[in-house]
View 1 (cartoon, rainbow, N blue to C red):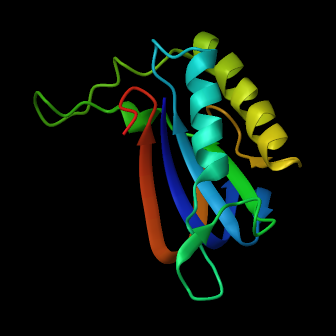
View 2: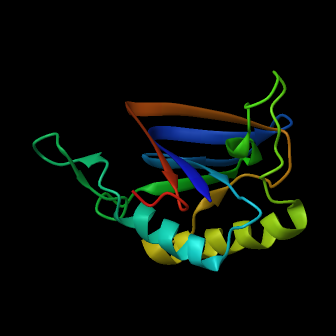
View 3: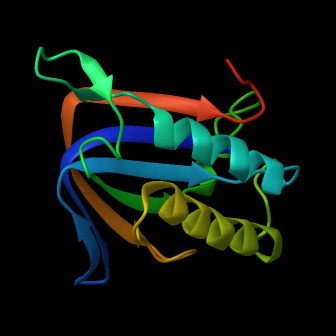
Length: 150
């Protein structure tokens, strides 16, 4: 499971011409789910994201977590995080989980993140053509992969 975490001052997602979710200060998380992912990946990733200290403290050091700042999360499914460009010029998405496997894991990630921060999170629409807008704060963008637990 891959999460591209971006610290944002605001973010929103549209489907068609309708805004379906928007947040103020917090995290925009693009989530890619691989065919070999399990609930264990969700547990590890949730803990990592919940404790990730990427928000500034009073001395402007990245020393606060999403819960420390009472921040918001916008979670967007993004199968293209598993694009392989090894051969040719057209990306292959063979490692990305199929919807029948990915949707239950995505829904569990929503529940897990909400529990970790103690409130509901905002989400995109799985499988939809979405337009995501964000104001990246910093900019701070971090890729976390549950298969490479660095």
